[in-house]
Image (tube, rainbow, N blue to C red):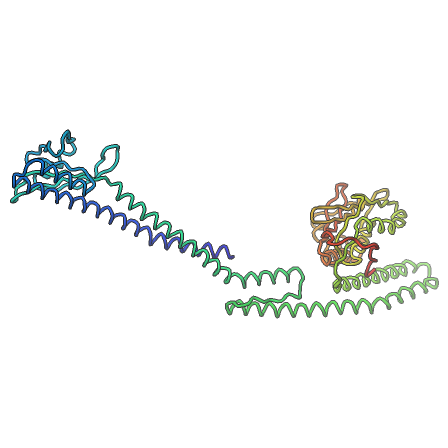
Length: 467
């Protein structure tokens, strides 16, 4: 926005400069050329007066020659004197011949009409030609031809244009500085509002909307946004508290209900055993759902500072933990990637819990005889941990919505729809992100991207939280 405001300010300034300076430059150039034409004509008329006086007083030729030379020097031009017959005075201009184009000016001057025009002189340079009649007692007794180069006046015109151009650049530079300051002062409150709304969109509900000095409308909008943020934070805090309390309170009765159902199993008739087992399974599923909700609430409330962890070490630990269960399903779990310390920054226990969720989902879809690979990646400015399975994979919609709460692509799919949202939340709390990609084998590549550690990895890895 600052650049757009500055660009508009400079465009208006540039248009104003063009409107003012272009006519001024044209007028100044016309004035210089007109003054040059008038001065040249006045010089020619002065020469004509002296020439006519010399002829009337029958002064010797040397006098007219001196008149011509002195006036030519004063006018910085070249003077040719002609008599009443239009013949060049050889004493004042020896070896000079007039071209046919000058004859018209001479004839008009002999008729008492002054000529003043631009001609092409020697070397193709422009000159101003003035033909003035020399009169004595109202009678034309000769003609004065004066030619003066236009170079000096054109040089002055060029200097005027350059001066105006330099002035315009200076005004534009000053306008750019002033415009930048004005644009920054205007856009600063809006930019702060954008930053606040971006933080709010990222889930940072502790944002303070402070836009400083701003127009009344923006201040009112900032106050409304701050009030909305505070209300949203209060509502979410109450929701999390309710979720944690409800989950905690429901775990005990659900566990007791499942134990009671298992205890009455021997007393149930054989033909009703299927319904009882279904009730026990449903109770177990509800218990798992409540446990996941409790872990989700705890993950949202976590305020721990990230620590340095070794992704390679954690990958080996979780492989050892899940290996027995994987072998029961005919699936192998291996660790690939970099065989060295891959130091990442994460909150305590986050990586372990993320891996447990990824491995649980991978084992749920991994076919018998397949392999689940844990891969650590060391990148420039990031660290990655991949869980790659060889299952049926997910389509684009499923890959995009998998991290939504309670979402399951197929209702028959085991799980609660809470595991991946917990993964995403733990990754964000650690300064990273969670992603699902297509694996080259056709399955799913579950990825956790984390920032690199800023300090060495501790001697012992932290234990999982919320499990």
